[in-house]
Length: 385
Image 1 (cartoon, rainbow, N blue to C red):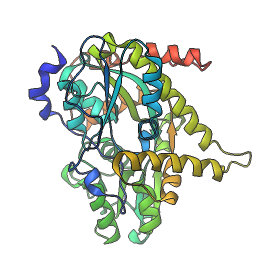
Image 2 (image 1 turned 180 degrees about the vertical axis):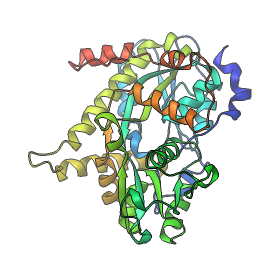
Image 3 (image 1 turned 90 degrees about the horizontal axis):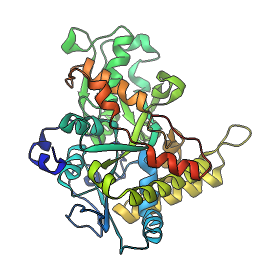
Image 4 (image 1 turned 90 degrees about the vertical axis):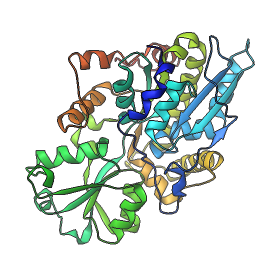
């Protein structure tokens, strides 16, 4: 089925998590009340398109997009290398996963920096037909944070407590449920004594401060905000629960028809993305004594906030942003094994249904051909699907 024909049913997709938050941040950015557009239009792409419409979330774990789009690096990289077309880059900030997936299927955007749940939503909507995962973006950056006054000192103290996640059935919600079950607990709705509530990021912070919840499984920078402003501590860094500490929190996806018709454009995008990833990781590289280089981190924080301000008019406090970025790994690897594991867990907890052949078909979402061409040309190691 043509992906654009699915606009009418895309509103039925399950969930979309917004992972960026800040008590000093304009919550309308994250609550569906605004969208920021650079040279925006509503048109999709035709054969050999003269535009690339990029969707993104204004989130810390998608730093390559914030810096690359906000500073103009991505636009410059693409437009300067496509010589036979008068090319335009359009960029739009989204506030929810469903609206972004809807925009992909209706042709309003061609490519997106997106989270794992939104990819699952898209797959449920169309199978492996309409979208392709073409690169990784980020790994890590989520933690189980508890109030210091909650009486929780270890996993043995979770019974009878109340915890929050950003959304029912999202990756943090599923991770918390998995951790509880593995630790011998169950939620109240399953006969146990642990309560899980779904709250917006701002409500998680306010209820944490008002002692209405005992903890939360949240992404950055909420973890850092709670640590710095709400007397919180990290009980579990989710990286410790995954092989090699790696699990997907961001990927780049593209409409299959756009990839087919405009491989040169997508390759230029990936070149810019890989360059941004290398630059970010160089700034986060630790010194010989395993400490961050404060000058380099400051340069990264400035670049991110400059990009974010250009895109949304807002910034994060430097100390929050530097701490949040330090807990995220920025990678070109889409970490396909971890995304498949996430779909398995989401299914186990009853948030999605899986038919026969799901895993094999899900793997068809990945097309790393152009990414590996770019990596090879830059002397970097190729990535296996």
